[in-house]
Image (cartoon, rainbow, N blue to C red; front, side, top):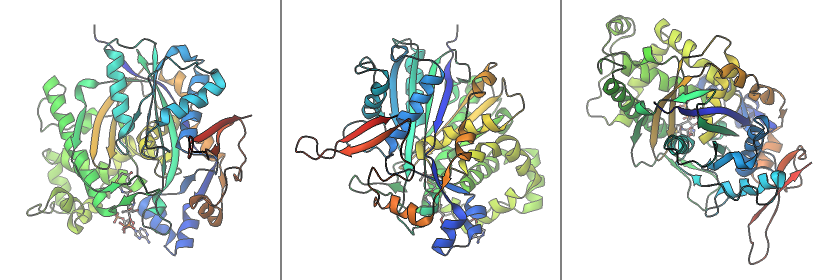
Length: 455
Ligand code: CAA
């Protein structure tokens, strides 16, 4: 009998502070509509002085454990994916373990495996696949594993990347016979290219990014991974041929969202590629004109060319695109447009958003994932929504958390960004949460992070 593994539950954590996108635009002398309409951003999630990627991960994990009434012995692995780990050697997962042990008791997690995974924003998807394979192979010693995605997206003040900042974490509970999403391992497709679109040398706090180029890399790798996914569907017999539409087989999807408009570009590019051989494409082309030629251009050059962008813009206005987008993608962005980029967490927060926003019956539907990480790699995979999913989704509270946040003025945001507020000078002093309380100062603990659960 086939072993079913997947995601049983999830718990999101977002910081309590945000910056309004229009206010940021005004402060930077940019038309607000560029951020709200051009990039699709409404709010940017901002970490307080006592927070970092480790505290967010610990908060999400604690919430996941509490709502499922789990004890440390129920858990086999806590694997944390991040590209903004506070330490270049000690894994963030051990910092998370230490924080959890302040609640569950010293040594209570000694039995777990706790690696940190890195591949830019796609890291959590890789961690998830690894852990699910482990569970499917029966190598696990406890029923559950947890994968946590946590990140703070940070660019230089006044840079073109600044409006795409954000922060959040999400913890995913994995097991056999999950209540939420059952993984379809046979279809998963990868697309990986050694590239230089976005990176952060260890000595830097902010990423180095070639913005427009990175958009092209995202679209290129996503196409390679989607083609691999399509081939796997043909191999298994779910699609009859490579020319058949993949879109018909996916009921809803979440894509990595560095900014919400990117998801629209990605879905449009996916549909253009998917529909090219279908009878309906002829009608679309008649209305919007032919696809531009790729001749003499690399994939990335083509995707960021003026001609392709204009063609895609016309395609996005068609009724055919709008119908698919509204049915399958839009709801994933309800939360994401209020968070900003959260790197590894983004695509999974999009999943959470879909579940919280949609009221129709989703049981049995196929949920597609388009995960991208700079450097660069895309993973396209899917899950089947399980019959009991509504019971699990009832306890999701991402939208509530987003509504309960405090808006901070630009000057305060800049103080936080530049590290001008000390750990004890948080805008909202920590309460019932993990906080970074001090840094080591002696020769044997210099720079070490000390965390505390503050009641
Ligand atoms: N009103 C409405 N729309 C406007 C406007 C206005 N006044 N002014 C401009 N726009 C529109 C533009 O037409 C454009 O839309 P279309 O693409 O549909 O034409 C959109 O706003 C964005 O404008 P630009 O492309 O000129 O924006 P930009 O060059 O300033 O920067 C960016 C955009 C490259 C994404 C930049 O924010 C950036 O570098 N961000 C960080 C890198 C990033 O997020 N890359 C994404 C792919 S890599 C990845 O996914 C990994 C990751 O997480 C980092």
